[in-house]
Image 1 (spheres, rainbow, N blue to C red):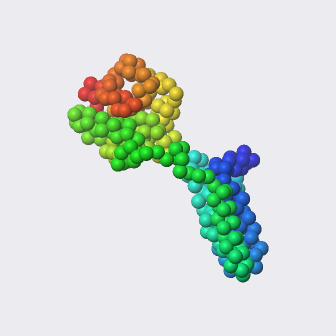
Image 2: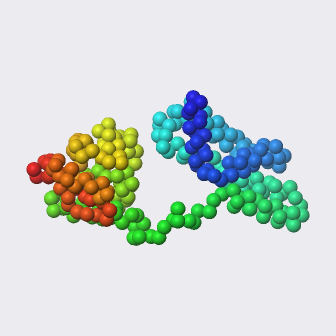
Length: 262
């Protein structure tokens, strides 16, 4: 249970990055707890947040929730905390404690500065980049989708199914819902064979024999792999032929299955 608590604590730290918002949030909760002017709002702002924190950090409830929604998205539990509302109310509570306008103005400026300086500047190249297309998704996803769709149409495959990297899967489903994918958003929680396929195709260097077996077990006609892996010859030995170069990805078609008219 201590390990689980430490894991939740790491999620908490990651959620707030290197900001001081947790400290501001806790200070505001303390203010609301003891300020006489917060008596009316205390049931709505103090006790629910304390309850949510108890549920979030309690190893027993954390274990249950992680089993229900998955460990990778447990950070979403922190959405339950009404941090913006609590900070805003606490700031107003402080301002109302002073009657002079100058004092309120200085305090308001200090509160704003505390909020600004506690966070991080987001408008950097680490978080934002120039739009490459109207869909606002990587162009490789568009190239791969169109390559698969065009080839599937030629082969008279109505619902082509593909397996590709986790990164590209996210965007292919946004661009072309007609292409079925081997795994969905909860990639590692699906069928055992598909979960193994996910692990193999996203490994540093997939094994061609294992990859083709898993892809066929998942009934995938297409594979889209980074061209840098240089798996053309290896996959050709297992009857996967190249049908197109899509940006930095190579699209392969399985001609060794019934769907490939073998």
